[in-house]
Amino acid sequence: MKPPFDPKTIKPGEFSYLTKRNLTDSAGAEKGEIFLWKRRGEEESHFVLQCPHCGKEQDGSITLLKRPYRIRCTHCQRSITLPKLMEEAKKKRGDSE
Image 1 (cartoon, rainbow, N blue to C red):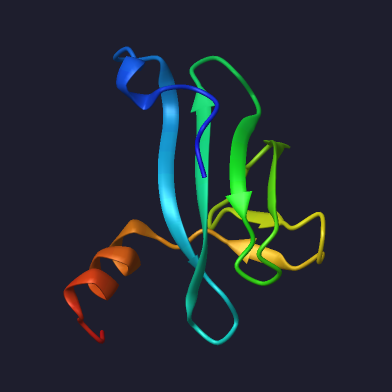
Image 2 (cartoon, one colour):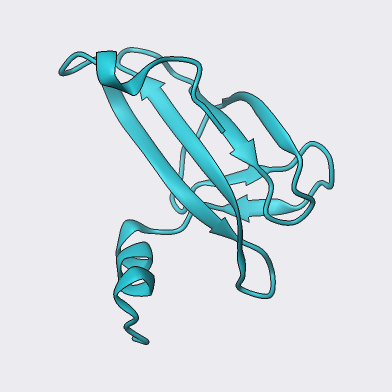
């Protein structure tokens, strides 16, 4: 899954939010990922997503107001919650807290 721009060409201050996260299905298996960004001064966030539930890729725009951020898959209609960075770091280290 590739973003629609080259991350190596990003200029400092160009984005107010930029993240790439792995996504888990309801059983806890990592099966999808999301690349989410919001350019400075824009209201909407843009995303490229591989749904962890149905596996289909999609892209779009959404206004995210409240954390935790959630996006609904347009194919299977399941709600996908973006994991917090702290949770991702603990999974990679193998912590169980």
